[in-house]
Length: 143
Image (cartoon, rainbow, N blue to C red; front, top):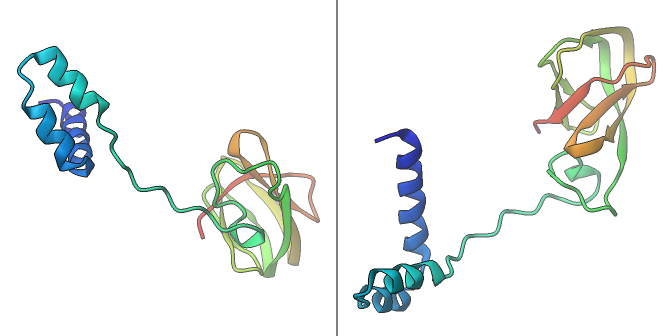
């Protein structure tokens, strides 16, 4: 069996496990295949709601699609010496957040306690702006 069929079978089984027993029993009693299938399709499967990200600066970057009233950017700094960035480099900010360079860019800053802004871009992207540079690599929050 192909891997995608395994996944679909698991999703179907897990979804049916969440459905209520009375509805399943009612569908099992139907003999007409079309009616039986329609009965199973009509069962509402209750999936748990995903956890909502924190609001405000603490949750900035953890959300995938932010409501319009959310922050457009945050400000912080990189504590200590910061030489620059390379692809996939992790950058810890003074506020405790950790961001990873998400594009293939590299850059040299060579300053201490560098002030930064992380601003929201289009389609869920985030960009790291350095006070000492006009370059803004794309980043993703990892912590």
